[in-house]
Length: 236
Image 1 (tube, rainbow, N blue to C red):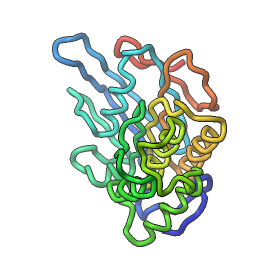
Image 2 (image 1 turned 90 degrees about the horizontal axis):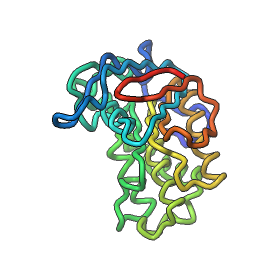
Image 3 (image 1 turned 180 degrees about the vertical axis):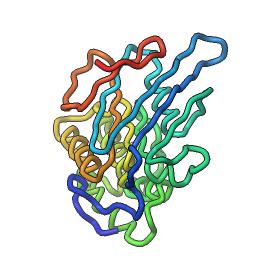
């Protein structure tokens, strides 16, 4: 993998983008225990080059929906495909294509340096061994993390941690990116790095689903906007 700016079209693995939409969700259902349905018949399709916003009140099920699409938890019923791949039956290929940024500041190993954290995540995300160190270095440079490369991750500020988490999300060049409240703790420079990474994903033929609470300032020109309310998804 050749190093190049994450803000421009980057190398795509053979067969990574094909004729299937980046995301297809059909009649998705999920409830916790005997509670009312949290996800109640959700349908959603994202096309190549699309960035969509998903909003809703706290507790509406936005994060649950993202975690299901990311393949981290199971739905009760319904179907999900990313570029035609199933999250369980095609798990390896599915995970190669999907990048997920969770809300908050989790997912970082406190004792690892920033460089080792990125290297570890590159391995988990199936970045090929050949050229991996070079790509980690390019990622450090792009996200302004090079001065922190040898610093332990638990000594970063909240904004620096969020930059690192975003770098981890995009390091494998995913074609479907799921972002849960990605602007948290980011300054203006960090936000531009995030937006550049989103643009790069779209230019590679991918798609992005961006989740944030209803009422939060929207700093991106989204192609489509959706609200999740009482388990139902509506376009706004």
